[in-house]
Length: 385
Image (cartoon, rainbow, N blue to C red; front, side, top):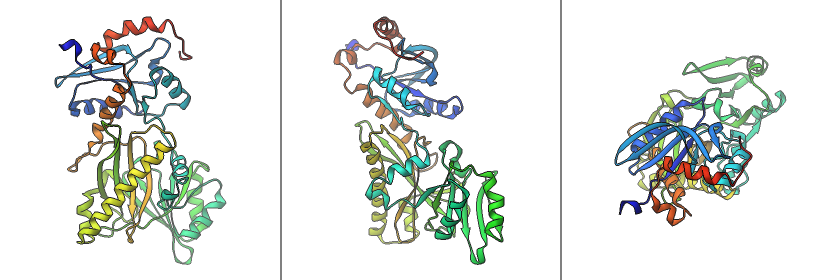
């Protein structure tokens, strides 16, 4: 009867050579995944569509044991992108394996804000944001809001608050800024905008930064807070909350996640109010906003399934969208984060969707399929390698 047992899905995880942490994370995901599965971690240049194979690190989990190998294997059933891949390349791969590549839109901050702003409901949760296109549009924005953020557009340059400046316009035209340097929040004051401009603008690349209205979030012991919600598609292909927590900064400006104190959202809201109804309302508003963001991405045709969303709540209880991370990292701590294994659950769901029954039951392992697929590839040619 074993020959009719459904074979474990063969899941590809495409990683970047410059971010080996995501490659190591793949093994951790497999260790915590409750079922059997086979993974291959690979770099996009090692995917060969003409031969329908891929070179990479092979991880097979059967009955709790994980076997490792390196080599060339058949194309995966499904691919989870953990790095940026050009959209034209994604489309070429989809012609071969179907629409089974997810997290394929690695957007930057400006792309994300512009996309979400198209939705009327979400627009009410977005702080006013502009591109820093020339030096003359910084001062009017600062003068209008008095408290703004300067953020690098490229998501790869702004993790953990790096490169972000908070700028506050004070009385008599004085300027105070907050920025991260060597894992610490630094403060610097200027007597005039001119002095601030001389110090700041030479280090900024126009067109590569955004200006964003600062939101004064609810405080914990006078320190800034934000809310992190990890969203994933699950084993049924549906969005759900994998984790939600509140981070409290070690400073009054903005959160450096590595050094933040964390609370469950219910425990944090209890420090502000004991009204059970209000606690439930806040949790519901945060969850509903997370789901709305995910569904908007679906509506616009992007195949996402793993997102980290940074939100903030002001003193009036309004929730704001600060940032969406298409390459989130699972949370380590006392609060459980299901985003460690949800991508494998969703990948397994995708792998079995529309798979012919005979293929599901034949039980061949990837290395056994390679010869078969190499033979069939002689009938096809794809513009790849």
